[in-house]
Length: 222
Picture: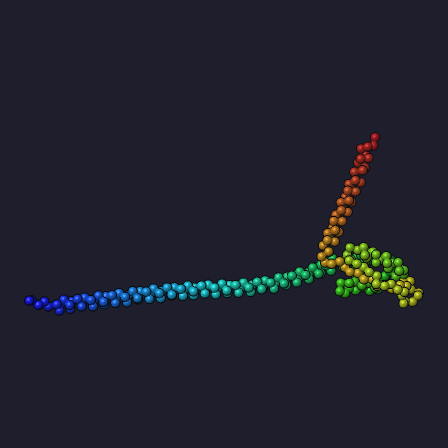
């Protein structure tokens, strides 16, 4: 019986398997490297995205900080403007109210009464003076009460004067008055303007009627 030598075939098979194993190993290593590179690239992409978002947020936060500083500066300027406006309104209130008030006081003051002192404190005006008769004082207080520039006028007291009897002013008095509030000044001024306009219109109508009356009489004469 003939003998078959299988050693060369086995050697070739073994070499072929080793070659296949090496190829499979290299392929596995290549696939692993590709996966690792892919994962690293993806993580690097996420990191870069996070850094970009962080930089964007940091820039926006800086812009918001600048906007807050501008808002605070604008608010401070508005506070200054509001304070100046309040100061101007207070001056305008004093000019409007006090000028008209002194005018009313001067026109309403009776001949038998004169003022020795007037002062203003905490929004209350105090008039001190002397009078020949107590009725002059009460009449003057009533006139002050009727003034549109006063909320109220009150007689605090009227008493016999301590001055010598030879003087004609035998009574001393103190009267207090409260000017109208600032929010009522505009209404009073508007009413005064309307009254002046009405008076002017009535005067114009009267003038027109007076001018037209002679012409009518001339046409009616024979």
